[in-house]
Image 1: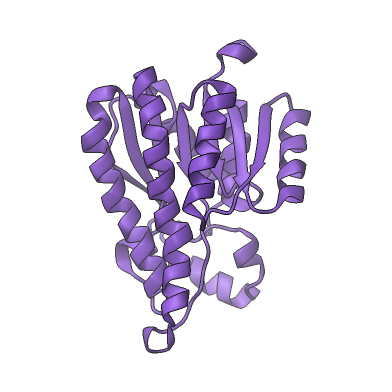
Image 2: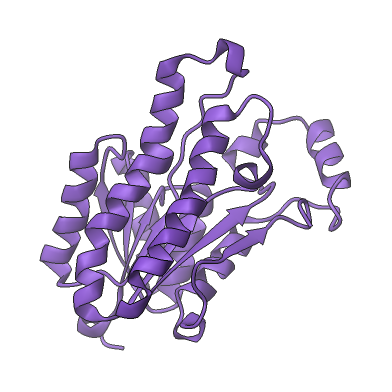
Length: 247
């Protein structure tokens, strides 16, 4: 595909970790990738890295906790690029704590970024995808959304909500050529796991059938498949990439 014909993929939380791995992979797959996060400096660095390897990318800073900003983000991409073909909602935050100590603010803050922003981005992207009669919505949930986790009532509620939202989108948008799927990562090596002790990581790995933690690139490959032409008959599914944690 020439630059003008490239499909456009928007990836939130794309400045590091899983989101950056997804953005790298989609750029390698030939998409024009729009990297979205709050940290403009990290976004610029990620964009430069992708472009240095021959990929086509741009970066847009956005406060995903603000619904108006999310809507403006999608509208801006469509206005500038004329289309949006793939939406990957990956951004997320944590405000962990046992439910008896969890404040309303901590609950609502996590839902605002991890669920409400996903809904707003999907709603804003649906119309231009419908016009193009083609689209891929890929929402990143978590095994926590499937099985829960002590100290993460807010995070689990949001990640579980993503699954229900996505299955509904699959039913509402399928006749327009748009698929909607979920990728649910398990224990993946990211900045968050870097802060944990070797002992804790080793014990976590021992409990997994594959006896190791996952890599961000393994989530990116799952997203790459769901964004492809070859996944055109896959919709409303939850692809769990967790080393067998919940098998």
